[in-house]
Length: 339
Image (tube, rainbow, N blue to C red; front, top):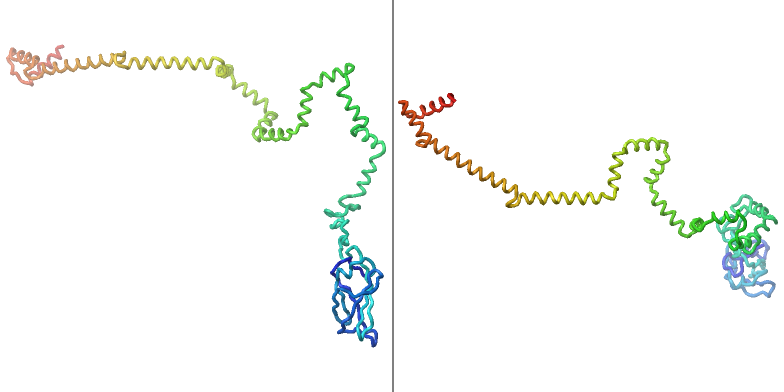
C-alpha cells in the first residue's frame, strides 16, 4: 500500500502512461492532466507539479494541499495518445519513511533499549523480567508491613509515641540513664549537614606523615622502641625536662639576668676613672715612671766622668794603673769573681 504522510512535500507519487495503440508501451513526451480525489470526494485538479521521468513514467510532486486530507487519495492522469493512468495512495498521520518511530512524536526518537529509547526485556538494559520478579517479591504481607511503616501507619504511630511515653520498669530506667543528652548529641552530629565537612577536615589533618605515626603505633616494634626511649630517658634527663617545665624556670632566668647585670655593673664601675682597675693601672704607670728614672740615674753614674766612673778611676790611680776602659773592665770583672 502506497502511503504518504499528511501535508508532506517529499516523496512524489508516480504513475505509468501506456500508449493508446497497444496499451503496453510507455508513452513519452506527454503533458498529462492530473486530477485527484481526497478521501472519496470529487476529483479536482492537483496542485503539485507534474514531471516526466522516462519510459512512460511520470510523477506528481509532493504538495501539502494535495495531501492535506487523511484517507484515500485517488489519482487520474489523462493525455492524448495514451491510456488514462489511475493510482491509489493513502494519506496517513504518521511518516512511513521514518525508520525510527514513523513520525509519531508520542514515541521516543531513539533505538529501543538505547538512551532515551523504549525499554525492552530479554537481557536488555531495563530487564523487565527482573523487574517483574522483584515486583512479585512485594507480597501482601510485605506490603502490609510497609503500610505500617509509612507516615501515620501503626509502627509510625508507635515510634511517635515513644518520646512522649513515660519510662516504666528497671529496663526502661536503665535505658533512660544510658541514653544521655551527650550521646544523643553524637547521633545528631552524625546526621548533621556539616558531617561531610568534618570528614574533609579530618582527611586534611590526617596527612600521610601523621598516618605514618599511627601506623608506627601499631607496628610490631613499638614495645622495643618504648624500651629504648625508657633507657635513654634517664631519671637525670627527666629531671632536666621537669626543670624546663617547672614553674620556677622564669624566676631562675630572671635571677640570672639580675646577677649578670650586677657583675656587668661592677666590672664597669672598676674600669671607670677612679675605679679599682683604673687605680691599679695608675699605680703601674707611676712605678714604671719611677723605674725609668732609676735606670737613667744608673746610666748617668756609669758614663764617663759619672760617679761610678770617677770611683773606678780613683781605684786604678791608687793601684798605680793606667785609667783606661780596658783596666776598668778588668776591675769590674775581678769584682764579680771575688763576689
